[in-house]
Length: 111
View (cartoon, rainbow, N blue to C red):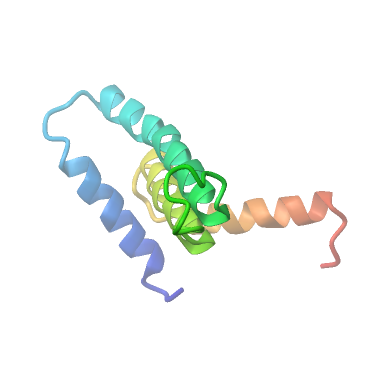
């Protein structure tokens, strides 16, 4: 991560918002949150490919995807959805750090 990462994330989220034209703000919000569910389904399909759980599709190929593909899809939509929800203000990475810190504290991790 570079110092520019939060600003770039805010830029990408604004770019996605601007592509919505004159749509109602609530409709755009619903679309962003619904995209999380869509991507979760795609992540599950990718995980099935990564673990070779559906040999019926192509028994000669085995594992067709990798875990990196799963992580990539999840990060893509999660970060832009959170960025949108926080007003494109470049806060999601800081929020992520806070969330990790809170989870570590609950788990009793050493500080």
